[in-house]
Length: 121
Image (tube, rainbow, N blue to C red; front, side, top):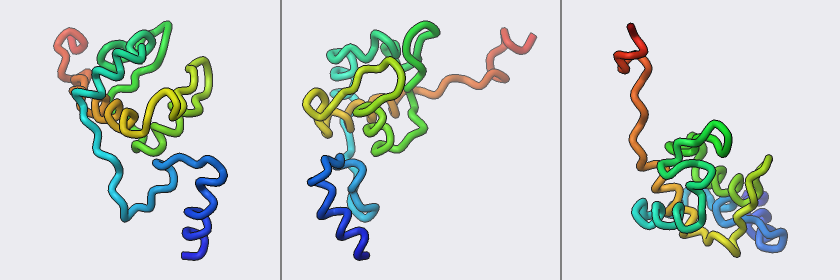
């Protein structure tokens, strides 16, 4: 308990993100998928990740249906590895990040290979 209180007190001082310091008892922001699609397109995410987050061989990876929880997803977008530019809070607000995440989570799952006739001949 003492560590959690200390973390919450010190977090703003060290620039921690809201998503990373939110206790499990608090609700994670629920995003608006429709607005997330608009932001995803407006901020140019589609240029590397495709309009549906499907990814492209020569550009960005598939990010639709992220396996990461929102806090981890946001942390990566804010401080990515590799060639992706960082999207800090100055660029993408926490509420917009939640909307983008909701959009990516709303994408339909791709079919399993066993369900694609052409792959099973």
